[in-house]
Image (tube, rainbow, N blue to C red; front, side):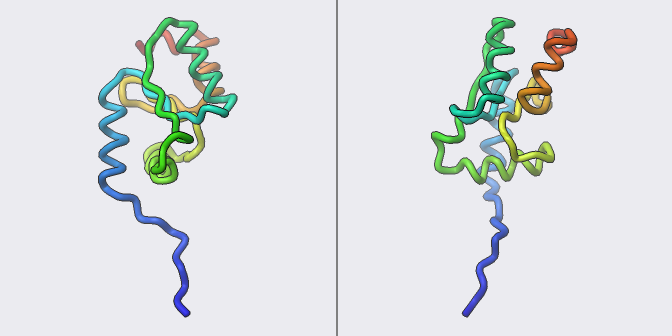
Length: 108
């Protein structure tokens, strides 16, 4: 019997897709609809009246592959992964902390 490898290879198309999404909009949030930290991050941008693109991973069949790409890019697979002008700001608490300190507004 052969063994099954638990390591998935990431399709280059998934990596390209993620990079294209990040490049297409100034604020991109990789999110899940039921995640409270994702809601927290979106609320910060809503309060600033800044538009964003939310990629709801729980609505996508390629969610695991996207999270694998985000893990490679940012060091974390968790959501939200928030990007501003192509740079990862981190997750929900990171975005909230940047907002509360006034640093987030300076990044626009």
